[in-house]
Amino acid sequence: MMSRVDRFILSEALRTEVLVHLLDCAPNEGAGMIGAHSPQETDYGTIARAAVFVPGRNTDFSPTHYTMDPLDVIRAFRLFREQGLELGAIVHSHIASPATPSVTDVREWNYPEAMMMIASFAHQPPELRAWRIVEQDRLSRVQRIVIENG
Ligand SMILES: [Zn+2]
Image 1 (tube, rainbow, N blue to C red):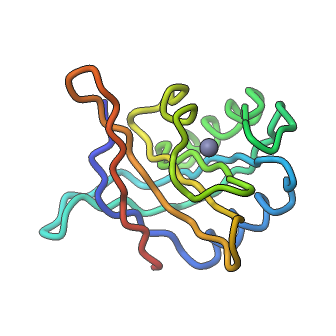
Image 2 (image 1 turned 90 degrees about the horizontal axis):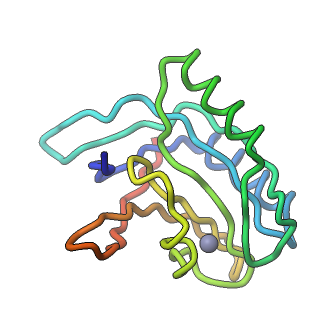
């Protein structure tokens, strides 16, 4: 299933949690997962609300690549299940490049039902963007999703 979400609601507190964890991982890329409530269809598009952030370890210890520790992935899915949530977004950081999916990010993307969220520390303040990867005619297309503070 592909993500249908048009707008992702992220509280200021969760946004801060995400950025603090990713900054802690610097100068390496950091990773994590956001659990969200089921998306709601509205007149303004399909909206999902973030509920919880699970920080992950980057087992690559690399400034240009990440692999989230499989144990952290399992821990995150268990927590989401317990709380009646679903995987909303997988987050990672770009230390020196924009908050845009790289070719590698798109090629290695295994969760088409979720959003890809990227924090860029290339400039201050950090920038946080969300994307969905849509398969069309065997091509991957990257579409930006609005992140709303709420
Ligand atoms: Zn990336």
